[in-house]
Each structure stands twice: as C-alpha cells, then as structure tokens.
Length: 293
Length: 114
Image (cartoon, rainbow over all chains, first blue to last red; front, side, top):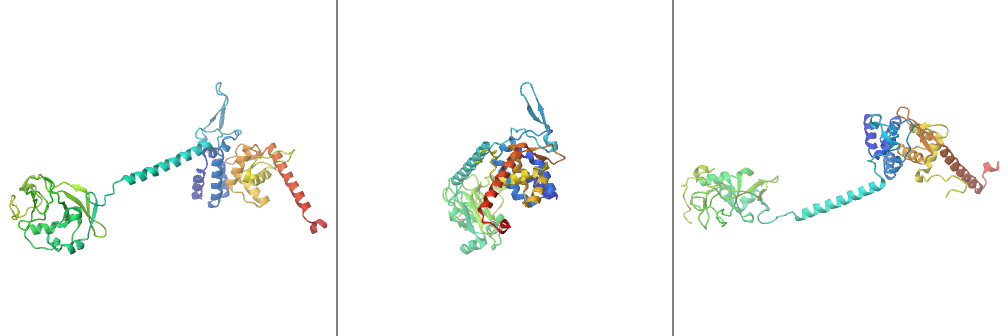
C-alpha cells in the first residue's frame, strides 16, 4: 500500500509541473480510491507523454472557483493571480508558473541536450584518441612473465643474479637472493612477492650509458663509461661520478602471477650520501671496484 | 467536417470516444474522477485508465465543455457545461444519424420483419 503510494508520487513526477499543480492532487486521490498499483502504470505514462505534448493545456485552464488562488486587483497590474501556499494543500493552482515549459521551450531544451550529448561524445572521443597509448619503449607497461618464466630463461635469477629484461632496459632483481649472493652465499629463492623485486633502469644516472651486469668479483654494477659503481641493489658506491643510485621502475605482480614493469613510474635512485645511508652493505670495501673493469 | 447547422465539436483526436463517455457520465450530475471511472465502467463496460481520464478532462476543461467545482476534501467534482451538453447532443445526433443510415442499408432482419 505504502509502496504503491510512493509509486504514484514518482509517476506523478513524470507529468509537467503545471499539470501537476492543476490535476496532481485529484489524480492522486483517484489512484488511492482505485487502489491502483502497477496496472495503471502504462496508462499513466501515456497520460504523462500526452501532458508533455500538450503542455499548454493545463496552463490555459480557467481559475477554479474558491480554490487556492487569491486574485489581487492591484492598481498597476489588474488581476494578478497569486498562488497562496499551494504546497500545503497539494491542490491546484492555475496560475501559469514561470517554471512552466512551453512545447517550444521543451523542444529547444531537448535540442540543446542532444547537442550537448553529441559534443560530449565528440570531446570524449578526441581526448581518448589523443591520450598517449604507449605500448613500446619508455613509458610502456611491460609484462615480463611469471617468476617461473624468468627462471626458465635465466635460472641464476633464483641465486640472486639480476635478470636483464631488455625491452624495458631494466635489471629485474630478486632482492632477498641478491643480498645473499653479494654476501657470498649460495641460495635459491623462487617464492617472490612484488616487494621482493626491484626493477633497476640500466641507464647510468651520470651520463646515460647502459649499465652492464654486475661483475663476478664484487657483485657490483660498474658503468663502463666513467666507472660509476653501484651495489647489487643499485645504490651508488664510492667509485665514479654519478650522484645517485640507479633509477627504479615500479614493479607489480598481477592476479595471474605475471610480473609487470611500469616504465611510466620511475623512482629516482637513492642519493649518494655515503656508506651510512645504504640500505644494504656488501662485504667489500666502500671504494672497491670491479677487477675486470 | 461538422455538418452545417451543427456545433462543431472540438477536435479531440484519439480522445473523442473517452470524452463522450465522460460527458455522458457527467450529464446526470457532477462527479469526481473516481466516480466518473466507476460510472463509465458500469454503463459501458469500458475501463477508463486514470491517465486517459485526466487527459480527457484536461481537454474538455480547455474546450469549456466541463468545469471543475470546488474540491470536496481531496476530490474534485466536474460539471458538464451548457456547451458540453450541446456538444454531446450534437455528437449523439450524429450517431443517431449514423445508426439510421446503417440500419436502413442493412437487409431487413427477422426482428425488423416482426
């Protein structure tokens, strides 16, 4: 019962405001007396469409005797109809309201809405078209594969040797294993979370040379151009002119276990502030360099 | 299209038939919305939906064929006007004419012979 009452009120909102003011209350009464539920829905909707198409009909109705209209015969404006609190009684005022929509205004508004919609679509399409869609090179997201895939290509990844993923110009570092490797331990770690992974950009922050794989002697990266040296986690060591460690790409592991390197998200390498600021210390001297370099 | 000498009835389009039902219902006294629907259903067997009823009432009122009376509680009775009676009478006589012509052109039925 209450539900159908609400349905009626909602349905009534489908009618133009002027129509509602004139007929809304009595129509509601009829619906209540009729115990009308959903069965009148199609008829009421047709009625609403009709009311919108003939929106001037309700406006042209003559005033109703004894109804909520006080006619003020003012000196300047003869016979101005003032609706007296039409809301409190919910019944009827015939005065055309300034909010009333004429058919022409309705059509104009619909045209405007249509054009706005079209413009919106066009704008969305344009922005979508112009939005950078980087699929290759710096800025793209690279799906490296699962840890298993990586191990199939390079089994030493489990022992801590960085995996050179060339499409992204990055070293993928198995952090727990890499630390053990640098300490001289022989381990194999294959259960890895995203936080256990580091993607180091192989571009030397000094002048941009490609940083080679860590040397076997002290497991540090050493740039061939100016001997900038980094520990296994890419932190800048004493040797060389670079002022910070290797930059890092964001690494995630998606629902299927695939490692994803996002080269659009770059974190600058840690600044070179001396040995006290390193997150990891290998057993070699602060100023040690690769023997073969 | 109205024949000469007759009141041209307002163009009600697809609401012409329900309008006539409403006018007939109101000719023996004012009725409010729900009473009109009940009365129409009683004398014609045709169900008039509330949306249709008010579309018709709005048109009839606009054409001056019915007029609203002061509301009683939350119901508003409507009364047929003189113009409304004239329009209804004109329509009914049109229908009478239609019936006469139709009957005269049909071959005589058994009832006609009796």
